[in-house]
Amino acid sequence: MKKLSILLLTGVLLSACVSKKKYVALEQENGEIRSELQKTQVAKEDLEAKFDEIQARIDTYNSKINSLTEENDAKIVTVGDDLVISNDVRKQMEATLQHVDPNELAQAQTLKDSMNLAVGYNLRQSMDTSNMN
Image (cartoon, rainbow, N blue to C red; front, side):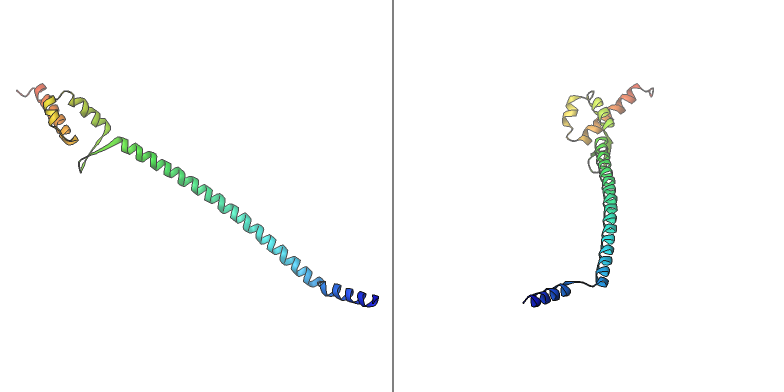
């Protein structure tokens, strides 16, 4: 019985062993896979850094676009279909409209009408002060 169990134990141990050649080949393959994994991780980190850099640039450009759009909207006012004036001109026009006859101003329904009244007032003022007798 003792011989039989030693024989069985030896058979199991010998069948469970891997040859040195196979072990070295598997170890080398494992090393190559680890090396490839490390290279892939480094490449991934590089790509993530580039992505973050590009994303930061995109965010900067988007904020610049938004600020320029807001700035542009603040500077330009569209009147009607094809007339565009700046806010400075609009303020000057409003100052001029304070001198216009209130009855005429009450008849103005749109900003375009108000602009026409301001232009008319300025023309009358220019003609009154000129020496065109």
